[in-house]
Image (cartoon, rainbow, N blue to C red; front, side, top):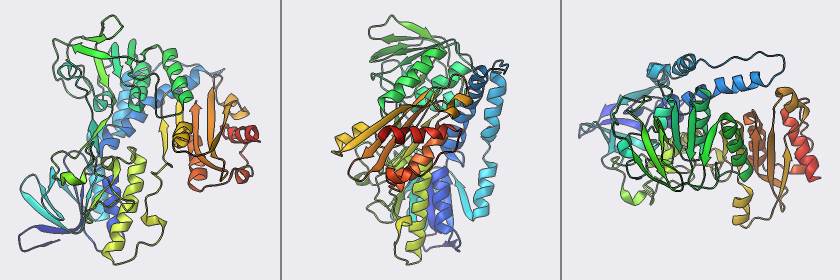
Length: 477
């Protein structure tokens, strides 16, 4: 690090946002070299996933999954969850919001962590905290992610609803909860809240089903699972207003005052103790100083497949670019981005697929850790047909020896979307108990464009749930 003529500190690479995508971009950009990197973070190094999303969410969901398996296994005596023990285990995975280990990792990688809010102040130049000025010799990477969207429903914001951060960091378990939304966060939140002892849970869903971006059967099975747990689902629901007289900000994850009354069209008004809003995300680009001409209509910062914006020196990885709002895809983009920055810094050509982010174009895997789980990769049948692709589909129930041995109440369904012209897999969806581990095989097939005739010779081990692959291929034959 040196000082330039205008006293701006210089680094080779500056990354704004210390979440998983930002960490990966910085690490890959300087790996094996003497290049320097600064990682700017205004909250906790490790970002949303580590403290407020993936890690606490999965930690809250897993105990309920284990209990469900025990209750549906002959010969096993199952008790009940201890909510405080579950919350304590969650806190162990978030290190009680202490990011010291993440900072130590960055130091070991040769990445300097700078605390504060960043703002672009010219080409390759960033200010931190409004006063400290730093400059990048090669690249600035934006990895600021997204924030929860709260709709403008009358009275909703004044009622101080829980956003996703509150839900994953809950400290008290409310008796009555309304979940607004029907997507991934809504379904997962509803699952762990019911497992932890919420007595009355109502999902207020604008659409006609859950998980609208997935194959229809997936949302249907998840809806049935939530209803079995005791949830009330209101579909096609218009939330007209919320009233809460004693709303008070009691901190993240704590109940925000007295009861709230919800006015949903076609329903009698009903009271809840807390409202969880899971209605989408907003890109964290406001106040960042990005040239407005680089942002799309929603505020995202689009890039090419090298993760570069039209400015050339400015890159964007993770949720902030709007390509695929998933931690693993942000980290994937960041690996590509770091390799591209390193190659350009060393004057090397961008030859080879490692410099091109292609997986987030129709090859994205995702797991919804609901009950049952939904695991999918690629595109749905509707997406394929809307794109004019000639496809055939294959569907079977997941009913094989491995699933029967897994637990007594195992149930599920699987679907493949196949390109007729190339005989390759375009998409796969599995919905059922513990299907998360099935999706990577499908991801390899989709990304590798493996012909289904070749997949016939990929023999699944017996007795495993993966034997469903054989049943799918047999159904197609």
